[in-house]
Length: 257
Ligand code: DAK
Image (cartoon, rainbow, N blue to C red; front, top):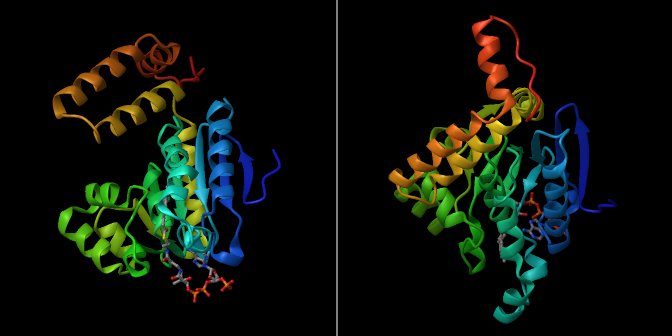
C-alpha cells in the first residue's frame, strides 16, 4: 500500500506504525485516519505480526484531530463524514496495540493513545483533552476512557479545564504503563512488543478480548466471558505445548493454533 500519512515498518514479530505529518504535529486528518485503520486491519490479518506499536515522533504523538479540516464543518457534514465509524474500527483490532508516546498527545491524539492497549511514554510526553479551549469537547472516547483510567474527579478537571498534564502525572494516575527518558521510549515499546510477540498468539488474542470486555459488561457476565475464553484455550495446540513444556521442564514452541 502506498501511504502518505503513515509509515509502516515490520520487525520480527511486530510492526511499527508511525504517523507522518510532522509539519502539523501529526494532527489527525481524515486521510491519516483512513490509512491508519486500513493499515491496522491489514496488520491484524498478518500472521507474522503479533503486536503493533503506534507512534509519532519525539515532538508529537499527535496534537489532536486536524482543527483546520473541521473548523468550518456543519454538524451534518461532521455526521456524514462518519469519522466515528473509523475510530470504532480501531477498537475491533485483535492484536495488542502499544502507543509509544513522546511530545504532544492532545485531544484526538490522547484519545488515540487511550484506544491502544498499553502506553509507553517518554518523559517529555504531554497529554491533555484541550477541546474545551476551542469550543467543543472530547469526541472520540476522551470522556469515557479517560474517566475509566483516572477516575471521575481527575477526568472532570482535565476535560473541563483542558489542562495539559505530564507523563509522570499520567503514570501516577494510571493512564500510562511506563515513563522513560526520551531516547528510550521507542525501544521500551519495542521490548514490550517483542515480549508479547513471544507469547502464544491465541491466548494473547483471547486474553486481550477478555480484558476489554470488562469495560462494557457487569462483573458477572465478564467473569462468564473470561471463563469461556479460558476453556476455549484448551482446544489449542499451544495450551498442550505450553503445559507439556512446563511439566517436562522444556521450552514451548508456539504454533498459533
Ligand atoms: N490541527 C491542525 N493543525 C495543528 C494542530 C491541530 N490539532 N496542532 C498543531 N497544528 C499545526 C499548527 O497549526 C502549526 O501549523 P502552521 O501554523 O505552522 O501551519 C504546526 O502544527 C505547529 O504548531 P504550533 O506552531 O502551534 O506549535 P507549538 O509548539 O507552538 O504548540 C501545541 C504546540 C500542541 C500546544 C499547539 O499546536 C496546539 O495547541 N495545538 C492544538 C491542540 C488541540 O487543541 N488539540 C485538540 C484538537 S480537537 C472526532 C474524533 C476526534 C476529535 C474530533 C472528532 N470524530 C471521530 C468526529 C478530536 C478533536 C480534537 O483533537
